[in-house]
Image 1 (cartoon, rainbow, N blue to C red):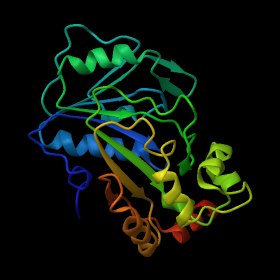
Image 2 (tube, one colour; image 1 turned 120 degrees about the vertical axis):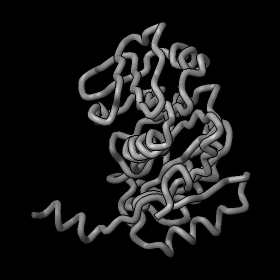
Image 3 (cartoon, rainbow, N blue to C red; image 1 turned 90 degrees about the vertical axis):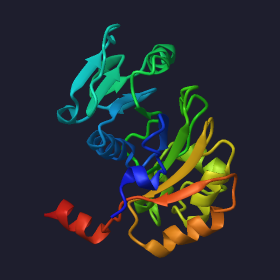
Length: 243
């Protein structure tokens, strides 16, 4: 099975700053990618430029909340986590300039940034202040959970009013392939503020034909690389939730 770093065309000899936007598995994808890169003896920083739910601290070798040590030197084959503050169930970035200063020090081979909030929804549209992209970003990965397909926009989407405006849908409509395509294509949609290489990461796929329909429609658009994430068995998921 192809690893995430291979899907994202990450060159293990080249430093990357990767911002993840959208919804549908950003945190899980970042954590899995960080572990893959760690096995290749890389120094990895995981952080956020906005806010994210408290991560799984067990995977990190060092965790810094509030301040970043001036003399810190990460070791090879290590994963570091940094955030400005903990507020309730979330960690936050309160000052992007501080994060950019850390990135500029070139301490890490890879910096993986959760640059967008989604309130655990599988699809979202950004508001005027989202996403928050570091100026050092070399890849912007736009994540969409395809488990949102055929689900009511008002129930499944974060910022549904904005989503409807961008995709010409109504609140009571369901997410369909066309609405996902329009979200990706819109200048104010998934890749708003994107820097560097743009990669569409279609995640939680239950019907591979749907994923290919989206990919085939978008493959010639603005140098967009389109990759498939995890497969998703909605029947198994529903059975587990009802057990």
